[in-house]
Amino acid sequence: MPSSESSSDSSGLVQADRPRRGRPRRGPDPERLQEIIDAAAMVFLEKGYDATSTKDISDAVGMLKGSLYHYVRSKEDFLFAIIKRVYDAALVSIQPAVELEGDALTRLRAFVHAHVAFAVKNLTAFTIQLREFERLSPERRHEITAGGDAYLSALRGILKDGQREGVFDEKLDISFTAMAILGQLNSLTQWYRPNGRLSAKRLAENFAGLVITSIASDSAVESAGGPSKLRRSR
Image 1: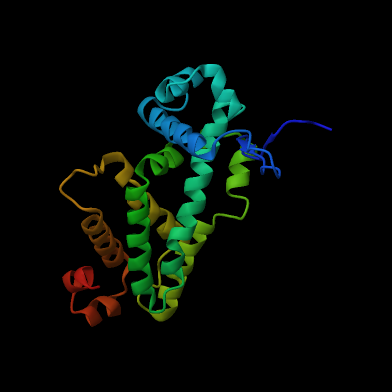
Image 2: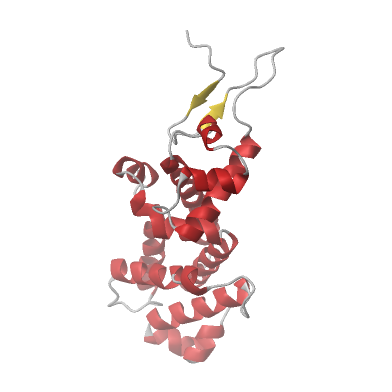
């Protein structure tokens, strides 16, 4: 039987085994592993995945290149860990908006706020997910999205509900509109700066107003008292 005290999960990251009774834990330190993943994310963001070497990552954390293989098998393992974690966390972040009681206008506004807040809070990893996803192997891309594109499906569900309720334009192409909204929201990774003039809350309010007024039905606009009032509604 193998005597190793550590193993690898499907991500390729080496996991520490549970400590046996009377014996200290061996294998990678989870906190140190997270530090290395965070450092890899910063290097990927600065140089791009293709231009980044494992030595760049080891230099960023002040360790020998060979020591990285105590934690991973390849550079792609880091990219997978970054993207998988942010993808899963993003899905969790929008659930309150999806499950919120209220009409589709209220839920869409909440969805936009949740998306923007998450993207801003996790700007480095979120940007890498959008920019470098295609660098993963087909198998790993499939593993991340194995449950279907739940994120996009959640948004499409809100839009369909809005059409049924009569608050969104009945002629909207749901799939196109959902992709267009996410594309608009995700564009913030190209220009948003945390120290800029817009706070995350104000940014989300602006996005929500633009999105909602662009797809609202005539009756929803009229009921709100006009486009400007609909844009500013809470």
